[in-house]
Length: 286
Image 1: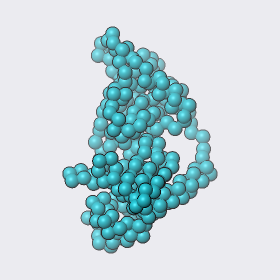
Image 2: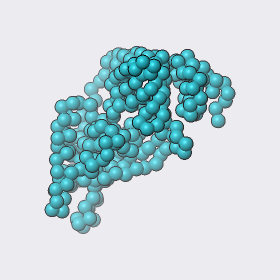
Image 3: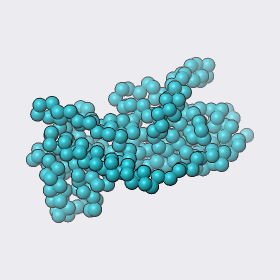
């Protein structure tokens, strides 16, 4: 339970960035003291209609939070500034539409307070500029993963001959989620096609360690691989992987498309997940 001083500080910072009495009384505003840290300060906020419900975007000196407090459940996403590619807002007479562009899709808030929208957009751009300057000064070449250092010869052969596995991810509460995925191996990475609003994509943003399990019941062979996942940002690689992944696959005499292409439009935009293996265990029970 947060003390009253902390709650008053959060409300004061919301007022300073343009929140009205209506905004201060929203469920998201009342929930904020539970997730804003003592050394964290609000630099911008925007609230309004998101899809079919009401939601809020909060920009702090540490991160950007998406918050949607419903009657029985609270939905939230957390983004670092290096995951944000831009922000747009359009004014429509009395209200504004804000589009926060990120590596995993767009967060759109409509019917937003114009003062809040302006301040939020300005703060996001300032933080992005500061983040880019820091990254440019600290940027070092990342080691290129050599997949055969982390996967045995037999395990790699098994991985390349299949193409379907179960990708396990962990959400912010520590619960494990599994999803059957098609994958491809390219340049020592394992790639998976997903959509921005799926559980696995949101989980990877919160916790990037994943597990891929590939098995064959006929040969009694199983490969369990642990890796670090992130969204692929190289456009050339994204285009190549996307074209490879949406091709029909042969399965028991039938040509089938990957499950992800059958998801509804509400699942968001396509994203390419890149997995760098860090360890694996290949078991052959025959």
